Length: 279
Image (cartoon, rainbow, N blue to C red; front, side):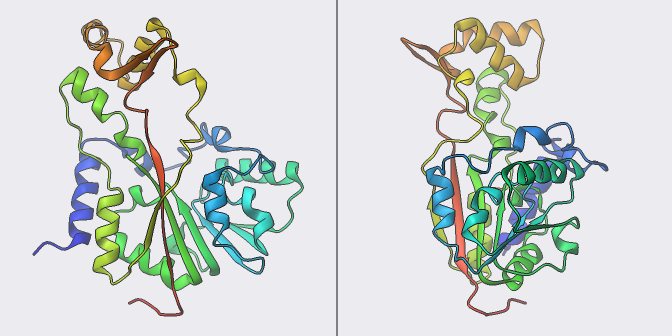
């Protein structure tokens, strides 16, 4: 019988073979040019997704944010914990974290530059968002998360995953069905097979990166958006997008909104560690 971990790795391998996230395997800081986009104001009003994470934090907690980037989540919740520890190997992301932290006057943070599997950091609560998609050997990764958290692990991911949001568009326009990223179904099966029974909690707010510039578009802007997602300038693709516009966009009196980004939601997977070590 194929184990859930083996199925997880197979989904990962298929996505990697199709060049779906090969940039994440490249040496160097591939986040450097994008890091500023992930920097948000830590003092912004707390939305429902942040509030859901905050419910699990206590004032005495050391809060580890694994792959926490520019601190989009951890800096916004720094006032809920004793200390925030950013685990982030990208220099570009760390630079944006420091800038956001200093501008907001947040003092209860420190930074670890190692990747998670090489880190010795421990804490009360460990959080990560949009990280597990890129981890092939998921069982040792989860074991390290569990054993490094004295109280709780929290994993956020998107459903559909970021890499899969454009699959419907590619299928409708190009007739392609790209291999999908490992996401909620695969990770849940692994956790249950490991004997963990997490709470799986859909979060209510739409993606932080979904802006008004991507909805209620003119026909011309809608076509341009689809072509950018398809990474194409080919005339044949353009013609196919134009003839399939109502298959890939929803039309309203205000304009056109993409179907492939119409309802993505974050999902929070969390469990208490209870002092029980995994092996």
